[in-house]
Length: 300
Ligand code: PMP
Image 1 (tube, helix red, strand yellow):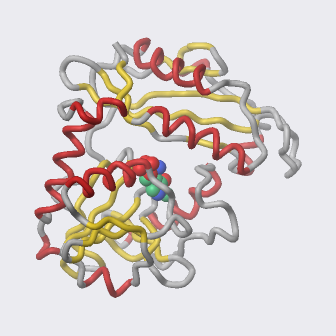
Image 2 (cartoon, rainbow, N blue to C red):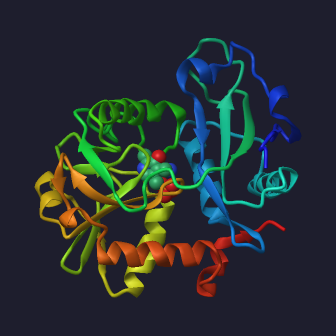
């Protein structure tokens, strides 16, 4: 499992050969669209989770910026499946497709600019402690949807996430929480956030957070658990009276929040409902819960 083969513009090659010129537009301006996808090994096969949804969002990101890739959804999906095979992946892994503007001078008008796509795989387990993490509210606010489209997973958008993460880590928090321009809860640098209060499971509206694919999965799980799930504005003060809080994302999966700004959430322990949702999520991703097999793409 070396992940040393990548897919670059329709060719499989060694990662050392997949290089770009220094004039590449994306290096200068963050003109890259990317996705984060996960595949799960359940001891028998490797399953890519919600591949269709990720590829659709990848294509949508490009459309916000009048960018195009010559590769169809089918080509990209096959590339991902075959890349997992080439790298002989038999372990849960992360898959990163990125489409970026290549040589296009220094101009800012990018309609019709040349793009390239590369895909690589990474192997890692948990990126956060699944027993719960400490979050700090960032002094940096989530960028407004009026400044740049929030639903576009463009490289440039992530500078906001990076500065908030730097800030949180320098204060010894595990993860940052960004408020939106109005001071309401937005999301974490790379995750959606949920609060549970009584039987209500709430996450911020998509006008102030990415419409996450893990979030949508959690909606399905929580509905089956008879929780009332909804998108709503979450005021900062609601965080401190919530019964449980957790974050969701493809790489992160579901991680309980046990404190925010050093104030304990659910007595500093993983909440009962959070634990149930985490366990059902794992059942789905590893194909133990066959009702959701439709979300899994078999690799081998
Ligand atoms: N918000 C942001 C800013 C993210 O980068 C991500 C990760 N893609 C998420 C939320 C979670 O989205 P998903 O569940 O689709 O990975």
